[in-house]
Image 1 (cartoon, rainbow over the protein chains, first blue to last red):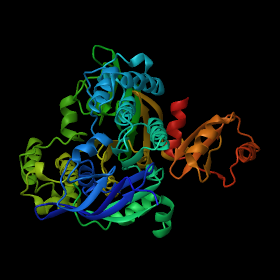
Image 2: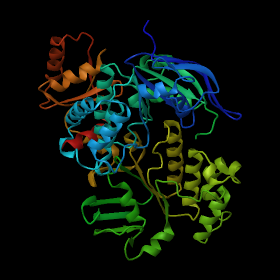
Image 3: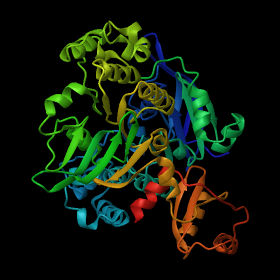
Image 4: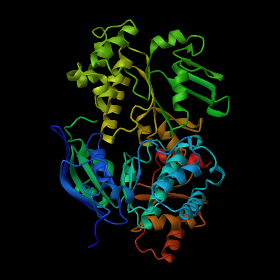
Length: 247
Length: 305
């Protein structure tokens, strides 16, 4: 058995009397594309923030990239990539400046930064845009650029929070090409999405309802288990039972 | 009878350097549900702002309920309900206060028009003393819809009401729209979710300020040129790469658990030929079937043209 890159045991987060994440237990393996689904308010963001070392759990344990989320949140941050739902590159820096900035933060050497940024710009076909302000790029390019920046330091895991919201169908698929490429190089991908067709692209999926993980398996097995023809139906069957009001 | 008409509407920003809406024309029939479908930056919000008289078009003409969007803006404002994409109620007023406020603006009262919003309002009524800023996303959305409806508008403009909303809440929202339509209200709604297209009577597919196609969803699907195939194997990403390299492939992209494949010259032998190609590549578990395109397939196809 491979060593899991994420391992949680009864991970719980309470805000007062409210249990945002309730004893969630799961494992994610190296190179896996793991879909983390749930309705609005189910507790996805809370769980993800704990795994990224941004929020201390109330109870339970977890390791991410081999580091303990209580004792080594700093190590975790250095070994993961994170792409937020909100576009988080600097709009008033150029493409190249953004790449250099984030590469620098993750401690890449000047030589590595030079090599990596050249390769990246070529891969994304942004040769003509390197000196343009990121704010002037179309949304689809911005999303692809933020993903590439998030994996530039070759993290063990990259966390993607609804990376494709509002993007056109062609760009959405180009984005998934990038995800597959990263996964093939061994990066584990942890992704949330509201597009159920994208759930099918994941190796395994978990579905959260009211703070609990209610289902966890491959898309095929989940469809068998819920006698559904699509992930949309699986999701609907599970999320419909939610009693908690959406966020 | 048309509730909304646009003829060659054009809008640019930043001293003409950004073309947001490019000669857009379409009509919305009275009492129908019209969907404006496209990604962020397609020009959907600009069109809504022009129709709700918040923005002046540079070229072209548009009418709402027979009124001109430039000359008769005051009449239009009385007759429409507009729900912008960003939550725009008063966060520090309560649910009830927001409703009263918007009713008063239009010279209506909550009691008078309660019927109009009843179905939706009962869901948030238990929280009527709560400040709007403290509501959940789903409840905010319902309150915003109530506020847009409280003066009994003849037309409702909804700018991306379901963006970022989970699939279950999205379904509920569309159920609400269906009921409103049954009451005779014309609805123009925008969305980036292609799967919502089939819930509309008529749709316009839009990208980069241009309309790609306007029609009933069925007719857009029927107009898809040639055949589309769904392909599957154990190694999907490798299959995608191999199919893209195949010289007869027109387009191939991931679509849920399958890949969707179309050929350059579609002949009865095309399917068998690609199977042979894949067999040569060492695949033993290929599943290939013709499939009816969806709106998303049509959108992708139109983008390629």
